[in-house]
Image (cartoon, rainbow, N blue to C red; front, side, top):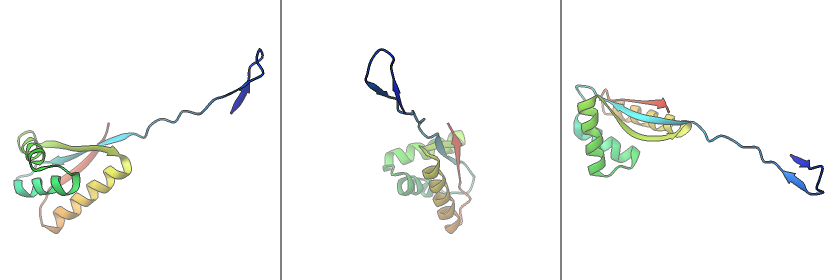
Amino acid sequence: MATREQDASTLLTQRPRTAPPPLYTVLLLNDDYTPMDFVVAVLERFFGKDKEQATQIMLKVHIEGRGVCGVYPRDIATTKVAQVMAFAREHQHPLACVMEEN
């Protein structure tokens, strides 16, 4: 949208400002049945964590009941949750993966 100032003959352009998309935190939730090695493998495979990072997150899930896997835009977070849930079910584990808006 262009506007003209009264004192000058130049046009000033105003660009609409768009807000960044909301971000979502993807979390793994603890259960008493999913093996720790499986959780580490999920973190490496779906969230690109190295062995050390994945182990730290897995321990946080185990001790605190939940652990942060990453923060993503809604579409990516939704896809990651669906992939993890399908992979866990395929391997007959009750691992829960959820997302929360920041």
